[in-house]
Amino acid sequence: MMKFNYTLTRFCSFLLLPFSVLILQACSEADEAPVARVVSSLTITPAPQTALAPIRVSGSYWIELSPVITAASSFYPEFLPTGEGGITRITSGEADIATNAETQLLRESLVNPDLRIIATVTESFYRLVGRRSAGLQTLADIKGKRVMLPANTSANYYLVAMLRTVGLTEADVEIVPLPPAEGDQTGMDRMSDALAAGEVDVISIWEPEPDDAIKQLGDDAIVFQDRSVYREVFNLHARAPDLADPDKRRSIVEFMRALIRATEALKTDPEPYWPRVTEVTGFTHEEIESGWPEMEFPVDIIPDMLDVLEIEDQWVARERDRAPRSREELAVFIDRSVVEEARAGL
View 1 (cartoon, one colour):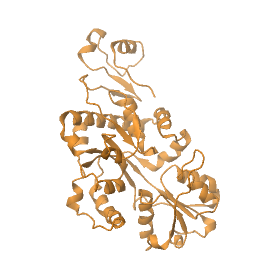
View 2 (cartoon, one colour):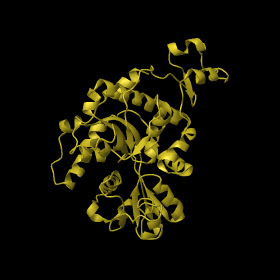
View 3 (cartoon, one colour):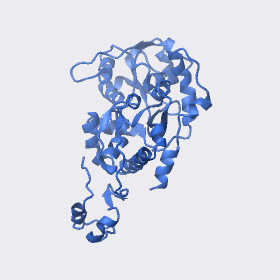
View 4 (cartoon, one colour):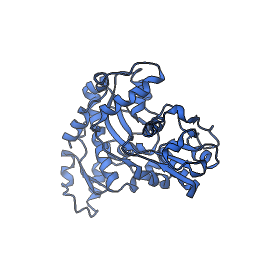
């Protein structure tokens, strides 16, 4: 992915290009104001050239991370490498901002109560994929079946939420752990293979594995999805002390502006940015394209964020035999001020 350069030389070269959408200042005035640039039909004016405090960005390498990768690579005033790993990297001091599903915030916030949700990057709609030949016609038929999923994740909770709609619980199915890694495939990469081989009856996982399973099974595939029951809320997080620090906050707000711009570009024309997403995540163009329709990109904090945390903390709390936190306790982890400040400055 191209790293943009704001020097006078690059600016002057832009005068040779037919960008009729821009009104450009003379080169002699270039150092008096930021230089506009065009990315996917968007006119973007960089922030003033005052140095930003360094920040480190991290996230789980899934398709949901695409807006963050694009923001860090193409829209922030400087190129930011995107490290792999979720919010535990904030706790360990390896990252300043990081993504993760809402279920992981509920776990990690017990260790790091300074964590704050500062934006919802992606809403991802999961699918249960099963084999008709295993006796599946309706969701209720999942009772007694073998279900493979990564335990204690949002995919695990998706199964729980879907089972609840037909009066079932996790105890009504056999949870099967992920297969071991093999070659260049992780256990998650091999879920669709295990389903196609008849080793399990259903898988619960995020994209692109469901699409791969559907393709492998062909007419034998059956899909259960209800977007009103659950969607993964893939959030961007930071630490409260960093948000209170003027220099660090300025960089985080500037990254949020980059994220807003990147999201708009991805909604307008995502394909120019997919090569960088492929480079970072390892997913192919085809895998990204297949998973894209199962995602939405609000780049805001969803209106029902507190409701989501309250409902899901009841499930997460059972893992450690603790009491669920109150609505007031959970509300502390939501900070809308960063995205509001970023939007006000656009």
